[in-house]
Amino acid sequence: MTDLAHERARTPRSASSDVAALQVEGLSVQYGQTRVLNGLNLAIRPGEIFGLLGPNGAGKTTLVRTICGRIGPASGQIRIAGQKNSKRAALRRIGLVPQEIALYPHLTARENLMAFGQLSGLSRKSCRDALRFAMKATRLDERADSYIHTLSGGWKRRANIAAALLHRPSLLILDEPTVGVDVDARNALHEVIRDLGRSGLAVLLATHDLDQAQSLCERVGFLRRGTISPSGRPDDLLKKAFGDNRVLLVDLFEHASKDTRVMLRRIGFQEHPSGLEWSRMIDASAQKQAALTRALHQTDLHIKEIRFREPGLDTLFLKLARKRKSP
Ligand SMILES: Nc1ncnc2c1ncn2[C@@H]1O[C@H](COP(=O)(O)OP(=O)(O)OP(=O)(O)O)[C@@H](O)[C@H]1O
Image (cartoon, rainbow, N blue to C red):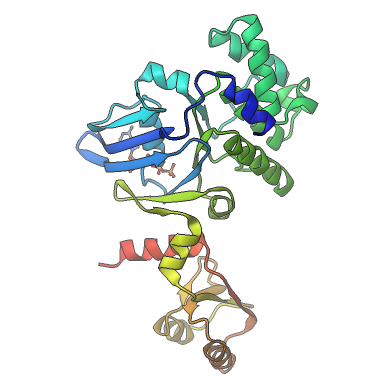
């Protein structure tokens, strides 16, 4: 058991591992006549990090707000650590970390956490214990006495997460936890999130960052047409969608001519938004890869680089988006 797990085990709200930390069944939500979630099912185990993915407007925020009891569903059930959810219960059982920094800029990190602890009704003693736990979990100690407005984006985000852990929730919901932070801070935040998972906390991570989801999440789910489908372990999803195929990427020095663009599309290439990158799936066979590479060099394309890589969640995301558009 990690130190953090010991700390969490001391809290009565640590969920037992055979009860789902979050269980959503047949959830439907609508705004007026528009149905956004439609019979959605989702279960997250204690200690599991689940990535919620989906294009803009798919309903991720709606799902999070409904889990937090802020939107009433048209039908369906939500249970947190086995207990039926309500707005009040959600406040006790869920730690929500919004994308924006929800802290007082002219207080230190420690003062912020003290203030939030006291506002949530903790006694001074419980508040001190909670603070120690939250700072340890987010490795915030070395900046605990810095004013929030002086901290970098990464440290502010740690303090934001710490504030959501004070009441020792069973489920932590993170909305785009690393938007706008540099690579080192992003990696440090990933370690904090992994540690929280290892300590037994269930984490629901809503993100547009598919690399982040692939490296952090044990399972991911694509929110589409009101339900989560497909969902599963990233490796399993990729194997099922692409088998042993690879992605062939072509980087260009300048845009292809109209005729060449037509030709590229005809042989299965997709144009990326910049217009300077094209990609398609290709059989893993070295012979086929060499033949296609040769053929590309015989066109009038000004090729900067041709490379092959394993498909990632970004490739799957594009494939699902294409499927959606096709009649
Ligand atoms: N209060 C509301 N009233 C009416 N429609 C709404 C409301 N909130 C959201 N919607 C609509 O519901 C759909 C889902 O929105 P939601 O914000 O949940 O998506 P999202 O996946 O979080 O998007 P993003 O990734 O852009 O944040 C969208 O079509 C949106 O326009």
